Length: 105
Image 1 (cartoon, helix red, strand yellow):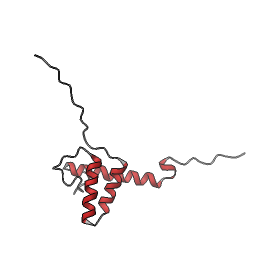
Image 2 (cartoon, rainbow, N blue to C red):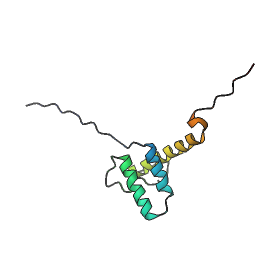
Image 3 (tube, helix red, strand yellow):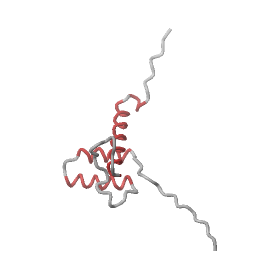
């Protein structure tokens, strides 16, 4: 008997949400081991779809231009998203360019 296989839709990679960016920034700055472990766990939960053997979830690569492991690639992705979020927060009006004043007659 012939059957058709229905492909399972799987989410590949991780979704970098604003909360994931905030957790990453806090985790990166944290010096308290216990708090750092909690932030790391929260980051794993927020990203979802992280294999249990990928520990730590993100690792700063020796060469950011050529990350080798999934953890290093995720670090680069989170660091880039963090930079973009900080840049957007610094711009007026949430990142939209300010309109020049209209000329008056």
